[in-house]
Image 1 (spheres, rainbow, N blue to C red):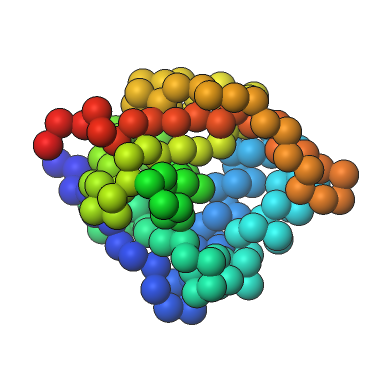
Image 2 (cartoon, one colour):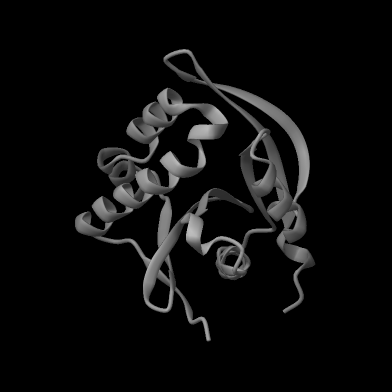
Length: 171
């Protein structure tokens, strides 16, 4: 039986472990989608120890390790913004995908959103990240627009903005 748990990322050692996990997952998953150079750039600017410390300690982001049978297999990060919860990160290691863990993590995030008083959860997902788009579609997200964001150094994030209504969840 698979025991799923969620552990908050709180201290500098945990944030450092989170940055290492992000590197492992991003290099495997995103390199075929956006290329090695953009992955390296994004890891340095958005998922490095300094970037994650700022996100958690200064910008109001919440991060958690996702665990299966007491082993860290992924992570998630969110930012409450009024009546919306921005789902910034929801990533699993390759060997943990397809086991229903993303759905369990999303269920946890829906509960967190409700506790925060949020009506919606929204996210951005690369338009070429086909398998992930299918997962979010199954969760009930809908595409509300396309977005191309200049992230510097000649790189762009070419995303769909997707939204999920927390109000539709039965208690």
